[in-house]
Image (cartoon, rainbow, N blue to C red):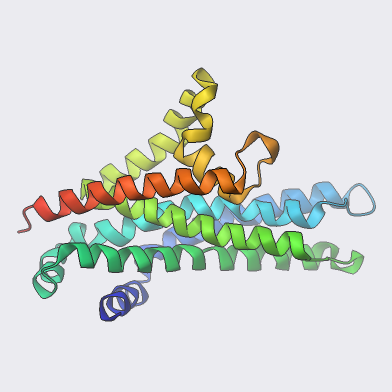
Length: 242
């Protein structure tokens, strides 16, 4: 618990590390929300799935949670503070575990500002027509929180394995933007087993029937998390820290 509290304190006392990612997330969510609301408001009565579509805009927060997870691990390597961290806590796997818990919590928390922006814009724009957040929307919010936590763990494991912030960012961006869509297009049978589509996409459930179900996505996500965590632990324990 002390290690986890320490990692959360590090995040709290270095806000500039995460502020840029948060602002970029909020900007994209704001633009997406405006487009969704404008499209729905121009057709008279709000469509039946308006609230669901509205909250689905916040699924972009999961991608930013992956980047946040990278930062949680690689910031210490970049600034050279990782040596003090491991000197104070020689059991490196425990440090990784504490960072994993902190990253998952912060990643899930990143969903909240996005939801606030989305609901505020919608309330100001079409609040007079009535916004109804029911059970389906609350379930989607819970999925977003879980998906963001999982995404942050993906990013943290990749950052721990590489140890270099820029390299980890390039790998994450390249995989989710280029490699995975290309693999899914060339080999459609692999899509349900890819981390973005098969794991995170299934957890979120915002992509319709093209994505695996929640029950099918959880084992895929778990397998990736275990595999990446094992690689991160092995590499971190063997890495020379100067």
